Length: 221
Picture 1 (tube, one colour):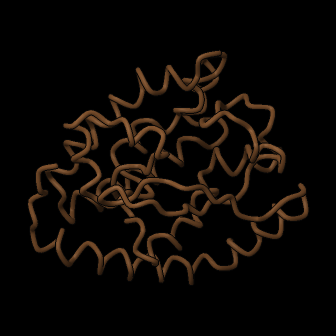
Picture 2 (cartoon, one colour; picture 1 turned 90 degrees about the horizontal axis):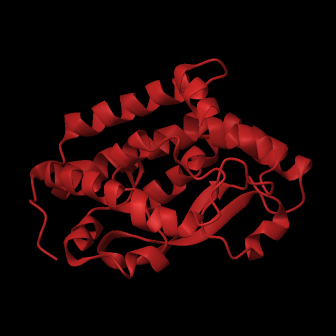
């Protein structure tokens, strides 16, 4: 893997921004996080959090935090990816996934240093272990809660609806396109670029509300 250009922001500022923003976010959102945790626990059997091994910076594995959105017996399912119509998703889980609230516990991963607020989305080792050489450059950056691919593929689950070959379709069609976007991001990591991507994420989530533009697009798929 070639080395990423080490600007001051990449070397120092990005981690400072991540640590400060994630700590503040966890503090401010603590009532919301507690309320969602209680709701998850009361509405379906199983743990509050879903934890799964993902590939982090330099290929190091870590466990990602999410609110659990699927039934407890889904943990042993062989499928690695989830479509929007998956029957294993709980009623509360559908709302959490649509609003992206299920992703908020990843602020813990950011505070711990496993992730960044903005970066390539962390993939499963089963996918990253077979990355082509040029795509392995993506692993030089810390994975992010949001980023160019998270914004571009915010309706990814709907692209998988009705497909019997979900994993093959994802690996052959969706993942390469995501990695191309991630490569562009990794070559131009800038503070104001990250801020712009964060605001784009908020805008897209707002559009996912019932009746929003993205919701209509999702229904058409």
